[in-house]
Length: 156
Image (tube, rainbow, N blue to C red; front, side, top):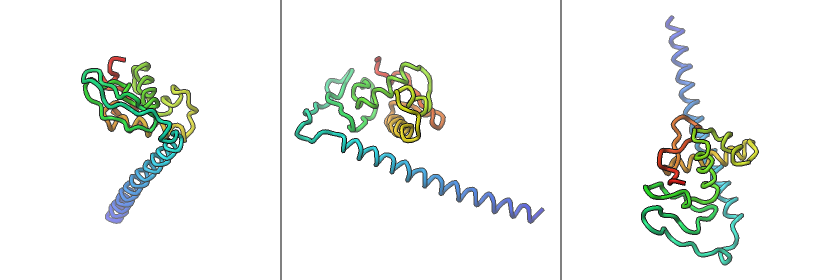
């Protein structure tokens, strides 16, 4: 029995080490996905001289960020801020969740956005959904399942 317990303890320690390595690898992978997407967004933007100047946040209730452009920063949600403050891709993601009224995984979100549910597209959606969740627009109650918090749709 002592040998079995020793082997069990060694196996548990190995599992814990591998889980820690997996978490580190997933974090590094997610950073690379985000970096690649950021570079693609920057390269897709027109040169700076062709951009229209963007206005700042206007008003307090129902505030919007005028001129939200692809690749812009996702603002932290606050009372009165509506999805118009988000870049178009993020607005569409929120609209899909508003329309569904229930939580969705990233494959479902990708399909609802009209994207092929292939890994590259699903990971792009996952990155955006995680960013929205980190900034208070969405909630991820279960891993990989996203939904809106009550009142987060800004009444739209």
